[in-house]
Image (cartoon, rainbow, N blue to C red):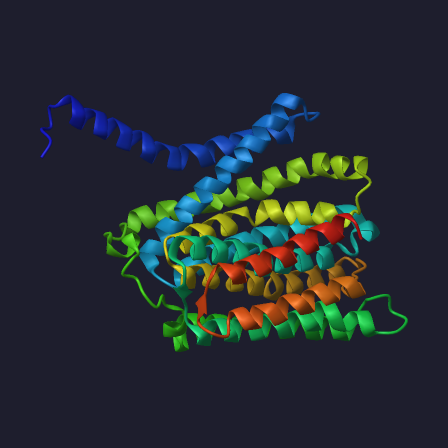
Length: 373
């Protein structure tokens, strides 16, 4: 037992205070950087470096506060918080770019949704399975909930990204009644999945084994701490999306300088926005909480379609914006391979590093073919 007047005890208290301070100092500092970027007339080297550093710091802060909330409310509500927050802000970012870009942004929703699905289903899931497999050899999860989520994701993706490509004479676009149908169908499937996940079959999404989870044995934070973390999570996510938008012109110029396709810009922005979810899912897998990782991954992909598509459709109808949803054949092929491999991965209830490697190879193919179509 350390004496309260000892130097070691005072040093420990000081370090604990510093560690607690960064959790609110980083979100505030990143918002200051975002404000400076908003009023600056041009993006200089110093400001660009500050924005890049602020983006990384905001991601770390967002993950920390999401985990505090998750520990307070428990699964699966904790993973739902981060997925919803990121998706709502991502939809706002997408909408602002559509309104500013006009006809040139007709394919941006399609590219963004497709990139998000590929990043989550292959990149995030692949890293989680690989990291978890390296650390624990094999990991287990509940088949029932993940299979239901994947079935909904396949149906949504087919309705929104695949079927429009087979409509002759429309260039990958839906008619107005068809747009309203897919928007309502996506929202309905997402709402039913959330009801299943949080009310009627919540046990399908609970971890199968928490014996190795140190967090499960810690006392949950107080309600005040949880609400504080919720507010700071929103601030951090706003900073992530805002700084990603600020840095996007620099990314676009780099893409043009490299003579890469314009779709790479959407992929880069999606990667930046999804970083909090990816980091949180990876940390959960490393802590032998693969169920939490899959809850976050599949829930994020469903929210990305179920929430974003209705918002985009309403905006396209209200402001008479063009909207192209159908994918090209090579993209449809990669999407099909992703869903086939995902069905195999989620079919046994146990995973190892080989499955993660397969998903990462598909993700690498997605990135390579986007740069070199």
